[in-house]
Amino acid sequence: MITQVSPPQQWSTRYTFADICGTSPAINTALALARKAAQAECSTLILGESGTGKELFAQAIHAASPHHAGPFVPIDCAAIPRELLEAELFGYAPGAFSGATKEGKSGKFELAHGGTV
Image 1 (cartoon, rainbow, N blue to C red):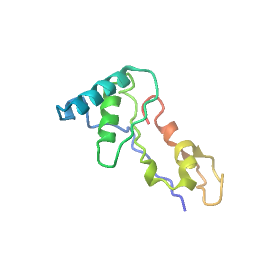
Image 2: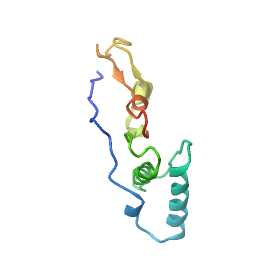
Image 3: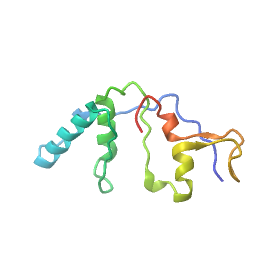
C-alpha cells in the first residue's frame, strides 16, 4: 500500500563544491564539468557506482546553479520499485489506482518546481 508522505517545506542542500575534496586529475575533471553543468540551462545525469559521491555532486551543482533558491529533491531510482516509478516521479490523482490515497500524491517533479530533481 502506498502512503502519503508530506514533503518538508523546503528541500535543501548541505554540500557545495568546497566540500568536495581531492586533487587527482579525475576529481579535477569532474569538478570542472560539474561547475559547467551548474551554469547551464540543461538536464544533467550523474552516473557512478554506489558510494562515489553522486548526491554530493548533485547538491553542489544545485547550490551553484541559478535554481539554488528552489527545492532540491533527490531521487534514489534504485530504491523505487519499477511498478511505482511513474507514481513517484509524476504523482497521481485521488483514487487513480487500487491502493491510491484519497488525496492523491504530488510527484517528485512537481515537488521540485523551480528547483532541482
